[in-house]
Image (cartoon, rainbow, N blue to C red; front, side):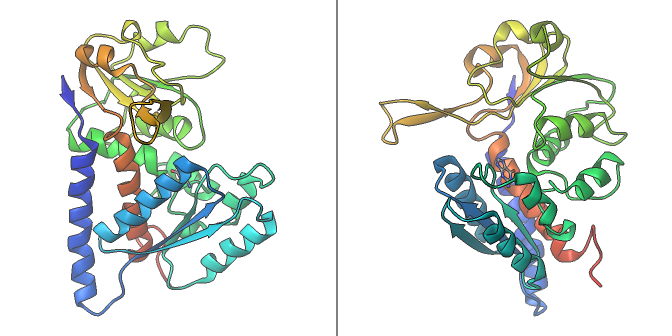
Length: 295
Ligand code: GUN
């Protein structure tokens, strides 16, 4: 069994980016610039956004964090989005989800210019991705694909089981795994809350991607010997022995599942750090006009 070390891969990708950034900055150009918008004070969201901003520094990027209280109106947030859309100094930006209930997430997603949508959530980018055309890939699925690629895990012709059909992870990763590409060419089964017998489907899978947000959902009896297990869950569970009062666990019962796997991602230190570096990779693409050429 091999542990897929998301921290080490993320460091490597950030170092590669830093080298590219240093080169362009040495020619007198400004560094790539990512902005993040954080609404309210959801503790997990705050922690994710802080990580994103900190990672910008590691890669030599500029970053801007815009924080507003949960009471901001939808129009107030749309005004911020429009300003960022128009700001020539900002290459890409994200609005951290979830948003407060009175704000329609899709209205905000649609307002972000596809050229600056480095989360890859806009229908334009998801559409390009679905057609196999160059686009910004959503950060978590992109991080998973990077892990498979950099660990030389061949999924062509393999059976994959994705558990969870969110717009952010389950749906896009199921498309990426089945695309005609490398990595790709897998046969994908997408399980969700209405799937009657997930265990029976999971047991057939060579690759399992678990992204439903339920601590320790995937147990050892659901996993075929030698499977690759990718754990996307980041769940906070109470732990009075910790100073913070909680610890992070994934959607996989790691201790019991790991001995059956050929590869597995830990939580923390697996998919999480790769999500952040994917965002930086997309921002680099926005900066260099790789997807949408700058006129
Ligand atoms: N909330 C959970 N994951 C993400 C993500 O990748 N991007 C944004 N914007 N919000 C999230």
